[in-house]
Amino acid sequence: MPRFAAIDVGTNSVLLVVADRAEGGRFAPVVERAEITRLGRGVDRAKRLAPEAIEETLAAVQSFAEEARRLGAEGLVVSATSAARDASNGAEFLEAARQRAGVEVEIISGEAEAQLSFLSAEEDFGEGGTPLVVVDIGGGSTELIYGTREGVMGLRRSLDVGSVRLTERFVRSDPVSAEDRIRVEEHLRAAFGALPEPPAGFRMVGVAGTVTTLYAVLRGIEPYDASLVHRRSLALEQVRELAGRLCEARLSERRAMRGLQPKRADVIPAGAMILLAAMERLGARECLVSDRGVRWGLLMQKFGAGHAGG
Image 1 (cartoon, rainbow, N blue to C red):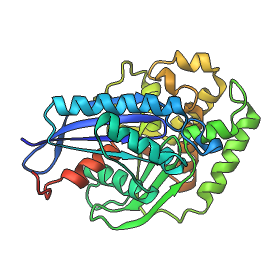
Image 2 (cartoon, one colour; image 1 turned 90 degrees about the horizontal axis):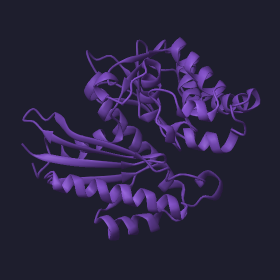
Image 3 (cartoon, rainbow, N blue to C red; image 1 turned 30 degrees about the vertical axis):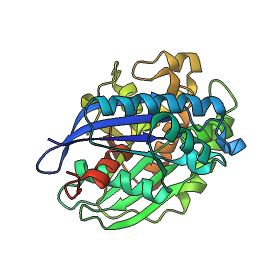
Image 4 (spheres, rainbow, N blue to C red; image 1 turned 90 degrees about the vertical axis):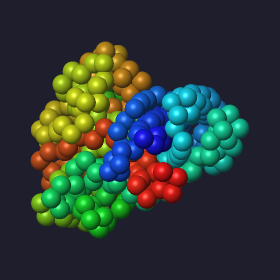
């Protein structure tokens, strides 16, 4: 059975999946890894990747690439998203990855990122022709995609609202003050306000670490177990209650919460507010939870059933 791997270098985390491709074309995970390296720290303000952020991220990429090779992956694809797109020295990171880890990193556009998130979501949730609205909340940007299982894309949009970006831009207090929260909410209303109406009868799917973390916190899942999170759901009222609870807790208290990685504790209030604002704007009563996302979309796009090498 052919084996492939994908690494997604995001603003907040680096994610690896190594998976076997079955005869039917579906991928079965062999190993999944995640490391929070915060590549995008300070990028919103300085427009440059910080040297220590580059170093930590390169170490994770190198480790993941070596693991994929040890496990016998015959193909490896690596992409970088918002932080590398926005930084003036993104090319330095690409060259360092080539030298250190022996990988070619492709900086993908916001629209391409949205397409990959949709590919992974429709594989798991695109049942019976029901339209999907996929929301991928990252550290630097949020991608929204309206589409159907047939691949008809009604909307692909990348917005510069992410958990790291909004925390750095607006959060000044610990715990998050009412004033901080108002600034974030006003910014989100403006960002989401221009979205077209979603398709009738849609299902909303939330992708990436913010959404999976919120579900893990809600259920107290520790250590994290993807099988207890993927394909579950968050109700609007649960997200509203979580956003309030996370904003009201001090950083030290958030770091101690079951289901919440300590390295994500500083940005999870903003992440929760992004999901809440998206659900309210779209009129979604619940959000299905996907543990997959860009890295899985990369696997399907690069190494799917039509891939010449497999």
